[in-house]
Image 1 (cartoon, rainbow, N blue to C red):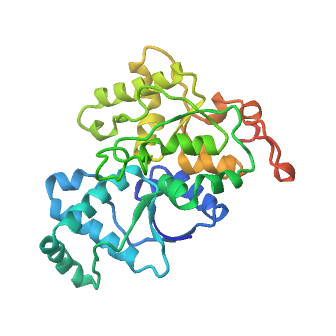
Image 2 (image 1 turned 45 degrees about the horizontal axis):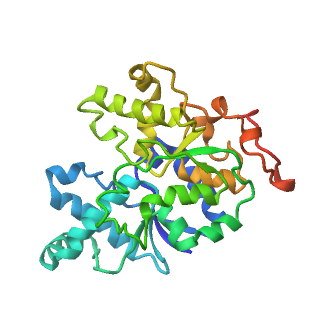
Length: 312
C-alpha cells in the first residue's frame, strides 16, 4: 500500500518518537510512506478561527501535493487533530465549487490544484482497520500484548462531529482504538474520559483548567487499572505525558500513567524493541510503571524473546 504521508508538525518537533516509530512500523505492514515534506501545518483549527480562507488554502495545498503522488492509494496522517482540521477544510472545499476555484486560483501561482472527490485522507488508525484490516494486522503480530491493559484515548478531532468524520454503523470509527488494541492481543480498559478533550486546546488560555482535565482523565484511567494509555494524537500526548507532572498537582494523588503513541503500541506487538520506538523519550517512562516481562508474556521466537525493562 502506497500512501501520501502527512506526518504533521508536532511529530517532527515535540514528539519525534512518533514520527520515528511510524517509519519503523510502516515496512512491517507493507505501507510505503511518500512523505509530503513540503506540506505545512494544518492550522489545528486555530488559523480557521481567524482566517478561514487562509486555513483552507494551506490545507488545499497539502491535498494538491498528495494528489501529485503517483500510485498513492490515499493520504495518511498520524495526528487526529490534523485529521479533524483537514476533514473540515476538505468538506468546505468540496461543497462549494466557486470557493474551491477561488482557492485554486491562489494555488495556481505554485502550479498546484486541488481536485474534488479525488483524495481520501485517513488517520493511521483508520488505515489499520479499513485498509489493512484487523485480521491482517492480527496475523502480523509477533509479540501479542497479553495481559497489557490499555486505555484508549481518542482526543476530540477524530470522533466529533460524527457526520463529517464518516462515523456510522458501517464505519464505527469511534471504536477503532479498542478494536486495534484487541487485535494486538491487549486488554481494552474503558474509562470516563476516553473520548473527551485532553485539555490541550485551552492550555495557553487557561492552563489550570487544561491541567485539571488531563489530571481527571489520567486519574480515571488509573482507577480503571489501566497499565497505559494509547492515543492517535500527538497533542493529546503532550498534555497527558509532557504535562503529567504538572497535572498531578491538580489530582490530589500520584499520577504515573505512561501514554503511548499508536505506532509505538503497534510496533511493540510487531516485535520492535522499545528503544527503536523511542519509549525512552517519554516523560513518564513506560518501563518505570509496567513490568513488561510479565505484561507482555509472549516472546518473539529467535528474534528477541520477552521484553525487559532493562536497558531502556
